Length: 564
Ligand code: SF4
Picture 1 (cartoon, rainbow, N blue to C red):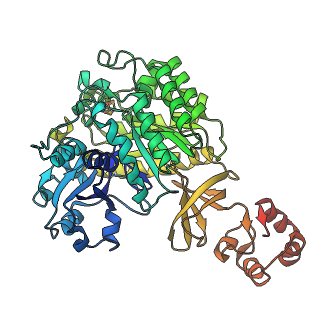
Picture 2 (cartoon, rainbow, N blue to C red):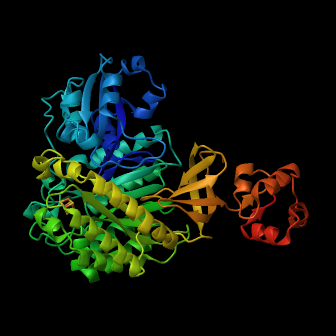
Picture 3 (spheres, protein in one colour):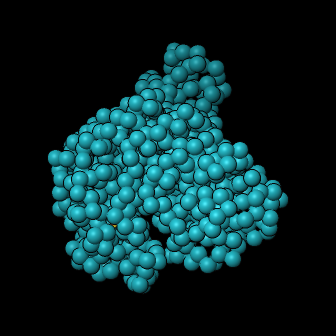
């Protein structure tokens, strides 16, 4: 049996699978295939393989099955790749005839969420099966030769225990393997707030009340991934990490968090993955943190004890306008958000070994919701200003427009409000960038901060863009074309709205590009050329002589210079 898993990359509110992330979808699918047929030839192919011509349509035609994973339910910002567009899926797959073609992931379940929702039927005719349920359950039944139901979902996590463990081996086929890859890990799905219908735009309540994975199952999966060489993990596939195995889930809209369960989880992970390089989390419900400050403070401390610095709890704030909050049944009022931001800051703002604060909140806003008016934008900005004025830190502010997905209450409303407020939204976005973002970045990574292990990912013009691995990495622009695909340390020199400028640390004076030298404060074009002409420079004395200005040379040396 030859099975191709074609990863078109997913970006959902609770799950990221755009490189360097690998989502659970391909891993579970591979696990399902190997659980039924341990000798199955399972190939992991990415949409980039097709875009770049690394895999041709003719090569796809030799498979028996192609399972495509795709769907973007939140529009993100990407650096060197991006999720598959439905037109791409059509272009590549409509000429593939031999294999059985199966569409899985959010695109199968909800359609493609590009630009406000292109319905799945746009590509439906290309596929033999569009799976609205869980792809791995469908694939298992299909391979067994039974009557596979595309709508079938797993009842609980025991069904995929083996899949998660066996499927971990697929990571070895990822183009970024082994260094620049981070595994997104699932802990539960469903939302406790589905009792009251949940937030109007969210698909999570459609999955019902939370069904939690057992600690031992998560740990076993991580152990398997670790044995296969993965060193970077994000416990990101859940609506709220603080609510993992919360007490009274199913009875309370905001169940009481359980620090003991979180401790069991993170301790277990560290036990099986001692040399982990990244351990981050993602989503958190500010309403939970505000309601249970003591428990959540304990949880934040536990996370910090086991994680790696630069971690982010992304809060679903959505709106600071009480009218919008009421009409969309959102989870937190502005005072709750301030309280939750303060709690995480109190515990997590200390700087860690990789240069970033240990654990900070991020804030997500959604626009185009019911009840939105001009006043909404004023209130949102007021909330951000207050956070700034109180001296608090947030790692990122994510402003997005709603994608009205089928099954949610916003589906009936559609894009109407969003379209009406398009200009307001754009203006608001600009204001946040100018008035809040840069100042926040200055707090989070002040000038002179040394950021460890940024990975050089892409050249744009004469700038190299790099990022650390982890939750919401800060984009670093390094002047000059530095070799790509390397981890390096950098020192921050300046701040943009959403990125920082940095120089390599230390600066390898005998090999660094001229553009990098030119960007060093006080050096400029002429001195940079003088350095180039006089290479190799062996020591500080030679540098003093070449640069002819003692002050400039001293400042340059303070940046950290290596003569090797
Ligand atoms: S609290 Fe709201 S946004 Fe979060 S998972 Fe539940 S319904 Fe979705």
